[in-house]
Image (cartoon, rainbow, N blue to C red; front, side, top):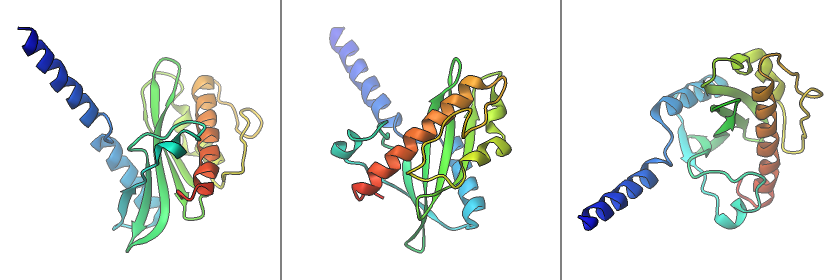
Length: 178
């Protein structure tokens, strides 16, 4: 009986490891839709960018296995996509950052927001504040980024997440990953 529990545990663990590093189809569909709109392309490839542990350890916030992609059309890089989660009051939200080929933010989008309050951070108008930002920018909530009443935690969290990502961009660029 103990062997059966052991094997069940091993199978469960292997299943979790194998399936936890893939982007859910719902998120992937939203990402592809945004890429098509922003870069005005229909046919493109998303190619995963693998980051070596030695470089990932240098980052402000480690980048997961299925989070950073090159966007290519006809084997030419047209941009980059980064998908991650950031904390809200009691849960997390998924967001997307699209970069042009010069590593300048072309668009940010909240893909899935899981709270009853604070969803205003998903508004295009508020998210436009991040467009044009680059690795050398340091964003300050309530100074560079406008606060949102009722979404204080989420808006601050998105600003922190963007700062971390922008700092990571510089490290990745300096280490010839991007």
